[in-house]
Image (cartoon, rainbow, N blue to C red; front, side, top):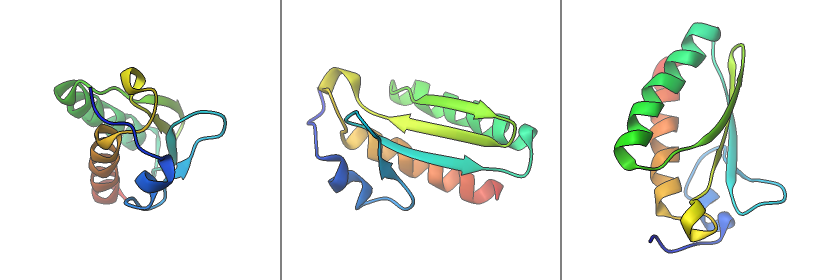
Length: 96
């Protein structure tokens, strides 16, 4: 099991992520040009998440994807969340 860390420590290593309200998690909203790009982002990240065996909580409406990351078996934020967040940021930057 990964070691739990303070969400503030995690967001200090990431750009644009915040501490989620009411839970030990980090959150970010990604906006894309259109629904197809947002869905493509989710599809590509689903593959990465599956490879890492670390799955996001996310919500999509049209061109917006809201992502919440937490490591459930650790009861909070871990390096797994930082790693997946970094991959999401990198892909979103390419799709912008």
